[in-house]
Image 1 (cartoon, rainbow, N blue to C red):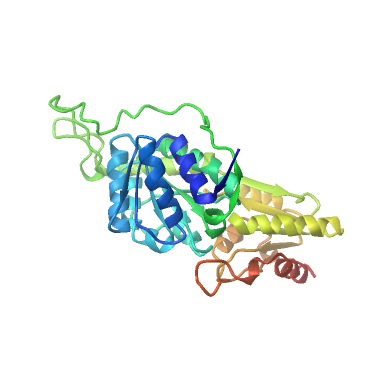
Image 2: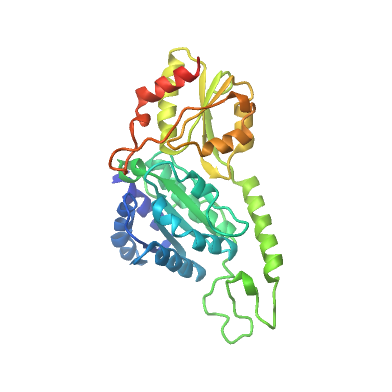
Length: 352
């Protein structure tokens, strides 16, 4: 057990998972992760590059991942906005990598779950509620990236990046993975069957492969498989709850605390947390809200996860939004809506 800041813990967990290439450009609160990778990764035999822009960083990561290395990049939401074309290309070219979004707030939900690139793709996105979970999710995401040959996202925030807690860093085993027989490792040179990662010309002239149409159909089918197989969630006290509060990430930790207090006072309140923002655990939310009179959505934005809750809550008329934009004056931390007493009042007022 070590006492580590979140950014340091995530960096060490990524290295324990086998990450050996990292490129990025500083932007707070991602900068802490970048700095930790800059001295921890080379010491572990990996390569770190402080790129000149987010666009260069993400494309460097794609290049490293194409060789079969476990590679990653990241930023906060503003920088990841610049990476959207490259993330889409990685998804459609089936190049696995991890993208760390150490976001400034919870306003990147659409970005992580809908994306801004082209083509039929999604990005598996895990939203940890605290540093220990971020450590676990980091290694799970490297596994999922390799399992499905896809880019994946860790959605963090200032609390996770900058909170110092006791954590255990160890290599985790999530099961076997397929061989990387697609990797551009140079072993096919001169054989007439060299490899490439580019969907517009799958295979060489002597072995044309599936071509773009069949390839993109297969990719679309793969993402449907992921949606069915990789949903994760957490819930408590929903069986007899008249009110179920839905929240994600660090905000959900505050909801969990407040709901425990209200339960102790006799209020029939429960909570539901999507761990995977995509694929969203819709069937589980339907079941968790089946008997609820009210479904309260708490997120620190103008209402983004709200769309997914509307699609999956058992009774859409029961949904009430109790979140909102809440940013500190610096723009780099949460505002007063994340105060437990404020959240408590929001839940009680909406439950009347």
